Image (tube, rainbow, N blue to C red; front, side, top):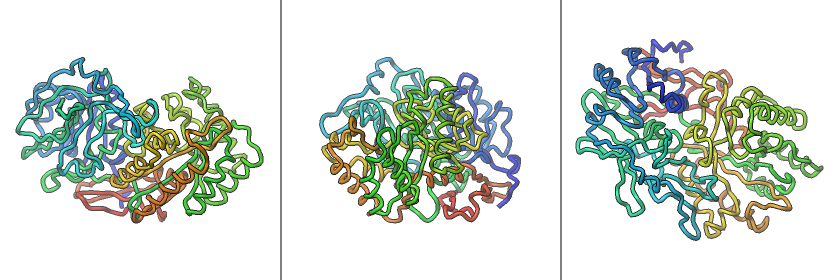
Length: 531
């Protein structure tokens, strides 16, 4: 381990885009930080900044001018995101056209009938390849909604088919015979619409292209980027170590919580079930609720049993009240209430109300002294739906991170699925296959609203069935949400890099040394425990 990780001594990943693409570049840079750490990633001010130690470039909407610069280099990995200028299209052997307006239908939401969820008519189909083997599903819809148009229990974000957005399909592309099509967009009848991901090889370069300016930052498909950079063509091209989302010694982390928008004490039977199953319980508390003695007693029991306590704001206002000042009050006053009434100590964590995260609200959380927040949902603020936990865009230099969780165990979905938890089990298995964190939530009841459950007995049976399925998998670690966030914070501060001697180096924050959550990295298909 070395404490000196000057960029001049490391192999590096450079990211570049034109000024008009600064938003997309910022999104992708933060995603690269989350997987490869700040120590390996830099934003290029100009392609003249390319130096010998930059062994991979990530280009957003790459131009012909960028092509002429890059072709002066040798032995490099290239990631292309979004639209392609003519020289790049010729280089990867693809035919490029603009997105036709008729594509707008492709991401419209269709309800698939009883016992199901709503989804887009179009989907992405992945081929079998070394770069796609870590994706836990073969295909996915451009959009999927499990409750109205709010959340997607399988966790991924929306890909617009025709929209002025870096989260939309960028072009109509036909992959040539000299390249490999890793993924394609198909219509509802299984007919190809366009290529979605392509890899092209020669002796000096390996080029990966994704048909979206922000790439794959908001789904487990991000593993294509991780595999390409950390493992692919390791015998001839530079590879970069990546940080795993889970600690060493486990196959996955599971964490549950209740967002306490209603009467907290009504969660007592659910708490007792989790106690019986010896699984940690977590509460995100809306501190503006009028709490009675039973509510306070349950909070104390959760704390005494080793559960997690997080803020859920004061009043659960839409869009955090609509401005920075209100958001700051909601975040800071809630934190102080938890300090005074629950003896909460640093670090402080928060679950965003409605999973809404306007940029002013994120700044308010930072300024209020929180270390991280749970957010991320397909319905809104796509820039805060992350494939991996870690650095938040526009707060890269702050000790601040986010973990995305949008899987909601609700009676509405349970009934829509035909009184089944099968889609939740699938979501869990996807995260475990992707070496990720499976987090899910429910809510306490109120006299007016029970989140679609017929009664407490029905809910307990569903939760217990999910618990037993999770326990049937080997080596799963159940953590309260506070513990999970603590690991994610330590991971977000860890640095990994390859030095001038082509050796793996790392730097851990002091809080992670001798910790029982051991951070791990993967490099050239080999796992390393960092301690």
